[in-house]
Image 1: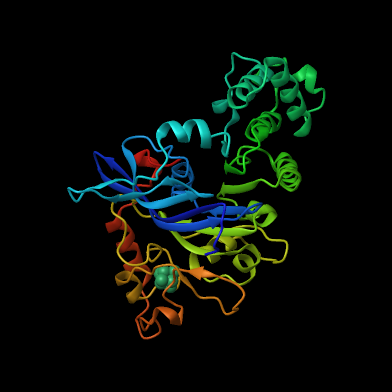
Image 2: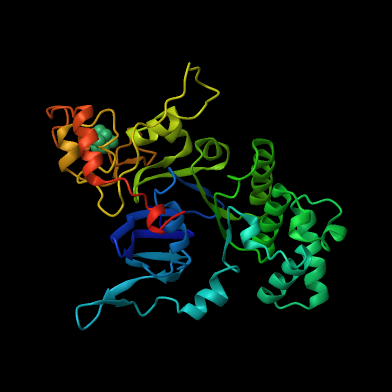
Length: 378
Ligand code: SF4
């Protein structure tokens, strides 16, 4: 990991304590975001992506809690625990208070763009009013200055007739325009990092393309870093530089985007890529990923993907692979959590292949309650 990342996450674990059991929605994940970098967090619904990204701003509500790990932003500690005198974990002294998170970090340093703009915009106030209020709240400027800044930001995100549209209500905007408003709001306080949680999922493909182009233009202009949360490998290919692939709360592969696509080193990433159309490959049929993600309440032992993996062997049922650098190029860090790689030294080749029946049984005994169904993820 580099010496001076904008954001670093080390061993982050988030659990939800539900009536049906403890759900480990995020399991000891580590990653970094550099200045001016767009980093992807990709995986199927229920993989733990949204929980992981909201944890960065400590926006996890009960019954969920961050139980382990360290989150650092520049030289500040957003989250860290230490052992207290009673042996129980307690907040480390240098961890920012709730008040500091609210007034100094959220919005000002790290902003969020959500998937559904209608959830973020209040339908009874005009778009301009909401944008102006947000700017005034976060920056020390007058109402008049906030108004002209709001109009300038609307123009900046490509909304024509910005002064006129300033007076309109959210329902008078199209889905793509509302998402542009949220981007304007996120950029209004000039944050260094924006967490974009599936912001283009609800948009049709043409509008999605326009929004992705806009984000890239703005990223170049403002130098903002992004954590881009998505299930769509096409979006990852379009805008991300570094990619983290998540499955059942774990990061299973981590590499620069070209390596993820052209030198894939995890079977789950392979399966994700086989399920999407690609301009560089002609196939008769796209392949769906067999089976469903196992229960996050009672996850399978060993590799979390072994109940669906086409190359699973008996050793994969018994050994949980951590994320290790398996790169064959000394200049690139490419991490994978797959026992096929020699570095794991578990005699994968000598282990018997799992049959479809044993995989099916393993999937059934692990259950199939997704993280979503427990309320821990969207
Ligand atoms: S560890 Fe085994 S089950 Fe997991 S991805 Fe690799 S081959 Fe498949």
